[in-house]
Image (cartoon, rainbow, N blue to C red; front, side):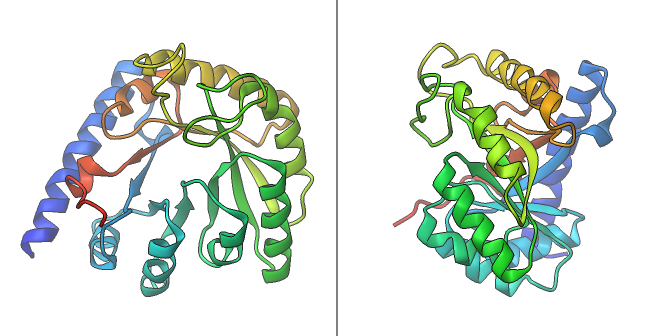
Length: 239
């Protein structure tokens, strides 16, 4: 085993222990929570090692980094999640490799994703990114739609050819009433998920929590956690 593989295996085991402990504390089964490893800024070689270690879900947030990495790893049994703010001019590239886009936050993006999914004969899973730091129908500092815009956007995704409405995603906000209150933020997302599922029962995915707050996300009921640093180490600075 290489030094890097040993390091990743150790880190992955620690994260698995954290998730398992959080599930036990919350009275949940471990299999109710899916780990997505956020591989942004790390090389394809790390993705390959993670796959060897049993990871099946990886996430990226910049198309210019993700596209070549996904191409290099196209032989691996991985589900690719795009989690960054997505410009419409990058949609064609992203639809080429992403299985799910977790950052759907405006109608124009839905239209672009649908058009490209139909063109390539793919089905793309979509999560509505919820901005808990935004006004009811506004947008958040790090993308996302305000809570008042969820229903309309969800209906749009659900009715769009080539797209599948899978649920909701949020990033713990740095400002507003939920700043520093991750548990409360994630519980609010779960409440919004309950409302969404009344209209769209299959949209039961809730993506929340990262390296620093995955326990709070699991306690709130998240189905997916997005962990990068705790698995791969402190990220190299982007130039």
